[in-house]
Amino acid sequence: MMEQLFSEKVALVTGAGSGIGEATALLYAKHGAKVIVSDINVEHGNSVVEKIRKNGGDAQFVACDVSKAEECEKLVNETIKHYGRLDYACNNAGIGGEAAPVGDMSIGGWDKVIAINLSSVFYCMKYQLPAILKNGGGAIVNMASILGQVGFPHSAGYSAAKHGVVGLTQTAGAEYSSQGVRINAVGPGFIDTPLLQQMDKAAKAMLVSKHPIGRLGKAEEVAELVIWLSSDKASFVTGSYYPVDGAYLSI
Ligand code: NAP
Image 1 (cartoon, rainbow, N blue to C red):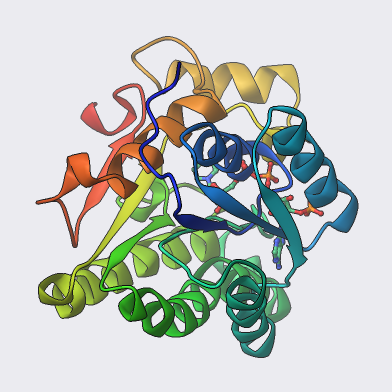
Image 2: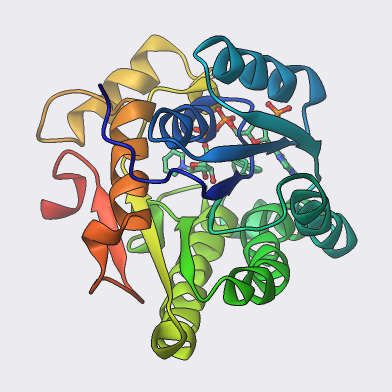
C-alpha cells in the first residue's frame, strides 16, 4: 500500500495532460491527494482524470491557458469551488518554443515562450498563494529545467524563461518561508516526453550523450522529486532549485 502523504489535501498541476505533468498528477493522486488536472488540451486533461479515477483516486479537470492571467485566477477559483481548498501546486505547463539563434528569433516566438514558460508561473503563484495561505501553508513546485542554469544553442527564449523561473522561485520562497509555504523549482535534464517528439533519432542520440548516466530521463523520475518537495519530508527545503538530470550539469 502506497504511503498516503497527502490525504485530505488538494493538489493542482498545470500542463497535466501529458508528460511530466501527467506523471506528477498521477503520483499526487497515488499518495492520496485530490487532484485538479489542468491543461490547455481538454482531451488529454480529461483522459488523465479518467486514469486517476480508474485507479480509485479523486480528480477534476479544469481547462487553463497559463499564459493568460485571468485564466490562472479562474483556475484557482474553480479549485476552491470544487474541493474547498488548495494545498499544493506544481506549475509545470510549458513549451519548447521557437528554435533559432538569437539574431534570427522572431519577436512573436520570444514573447510566446516567455508568456507560457515564465509569466505563467508568476500568474499561477499570484493566485495560488492567497489560497494556500488560507490553510496555514502548503508547497509550490515550479518546473524549471537544466536550462534554468545553463544555456543551449537555439533555445535562448526557453533558457531565459527557465532562468527566470529559478529567480522567481528563490524570491517567492524567501518571501513566504515564514508563513508556511515552501516554494522550490526542479530542473529536469532532457526527459523522454511528447515535448521531444519532433526530434529525429540522431538529435535524441546527441542529447543522450550529454547525460553521463547514458540515457534520457523518464517523466516519473521528475514526478518523484516534485512529490518529495511537496511533502512534509522536505520541511526545511524552500527557495531553491533541484536538478534531476542524470548528471547533465556535472560535466
Ligand atoms: P509535454 O509532454 O509537451 O506536456 C506539456 C503539457 O502542457 C501539454 O499537455 C501541453 O498541451 C500543455 N500546454 C502547452 N501550452 C500550454 C498553455 N499555454 N497552458 C496550459 N497548458 C499548456 O511536455 P513535458 O516534457 O512534460 O514538459 C513539462 C514541463 O517540463 C515544461 O515546463 C517543460 O519546459 C519542462 N521540462 C521538460 C523537459 C523535457 O526534456 N521534456 C526538460 C526540462 C524541463 P499540448 O500538448 O496541447 O501543447
